[in-house]
Image (cartoon, rainbow, N blue to C red; front, side):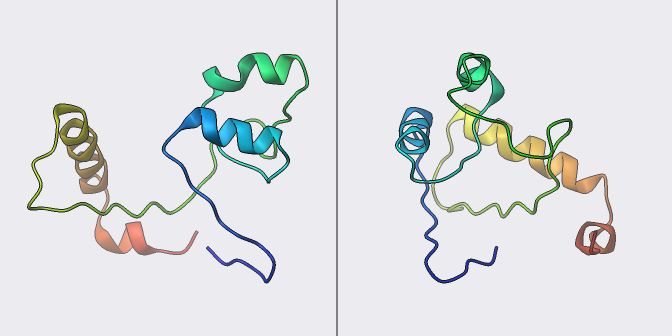
Length: 96
């Protein structure tokens, strides 16, 4: 991700906090559709392009191997690893 001067990237594990910051005018954000369904219907929030599909983005996964994961974390990581194994490394790294 490249950020230009004057832009700041903020992150929060709280969907309510991200939603509150968007409402307060701090910028844009990615929120699950079920969280913003009513906001979209009431035009308190607007969907940004692309409106009709998923956005193709790179995802970096980092975790502390020494730390024991809970069941949800382990299931997520296992699912991501299964998904990555479907594609050869050159295919995963190829520019899109």
